[in-house]
Structures are given as C-alpha cells and as structure tokens.
Length: 134
Image 1 (cartoon, rainbow, N blue to C red):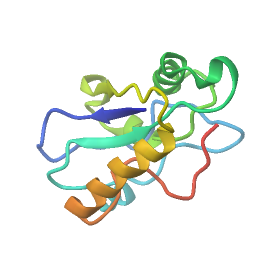
Image 2 (cartoon, rainbow, N blue to C red):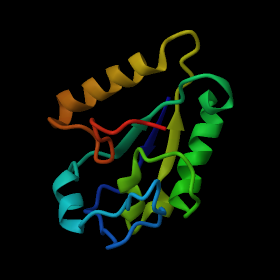
Image 3 (tube, rainbow, N blue to C red):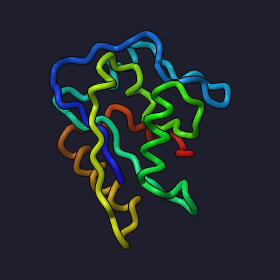
Image 4 (cartoon, one colour):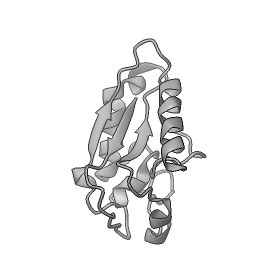
C-alpha cells in the first residue's frame, strides 16, 4: 500500500484544471471551491492507495507508476486520488509505501484510513469513498 503526502502544511493553491486527462469520458477536474471544502487542514497525508488483484497490475511499483503517469497527462487506469493533480505544488508531493507481505493490503489501508479519520474527523483529501479503483 502507499500514501501520498505533502511536506508543507501551508494552505494549498488549486488550479482550475487538473493535469490529469479525461478518462472514460470523465473529466478529473472539479471546481476549486469543492477542493477547498475537501481539504483537511493540518494533514499532510493526502491519499492512501493500494495495489491489488492478479498479475502485473497488482504490483505496487506498477500501481504507483500509473498514478504518476495519470497525473502527467497519460490516459491510464488510475482514477483514484485524482484531486491531487489540481494542486499547484503537485510536483513536490512525496510517495511513501508499506510492504504488507502476507497481510491483506486492503486491511492495512483500512486501519490507516481509520486512524486518519479518528484524528481529523474526515478521510484524506483525495480519497473518495464511492469511487472504484481500476
């Protein structure tokens, strides 16, 4: 599993358009006002993700590569976390990861999400509960 974090705790600046492309006819951009509402003040973790499933798509390295490629304008299957690509300082974000070994990465992510929710009272900025990962 992996996490995207921002070293700065300064208020963010949002661009009107995402650097990510349309995917399956959907525009990844949302209004900056909506992004401001989603922002979790004081939190540096912006997104939790995980690699899952069979084959090469389940490899953590490949999952993170797709995430970064999507943010750099490539049409790839990584819709999750798309809000970070409207941050003016998105290029300064950092990726951290945790090898889960035999543990289910979904459970590990769930525990981290729960701890984040307990601390901040809401999910990380770019985690959207109802979206399905590709």
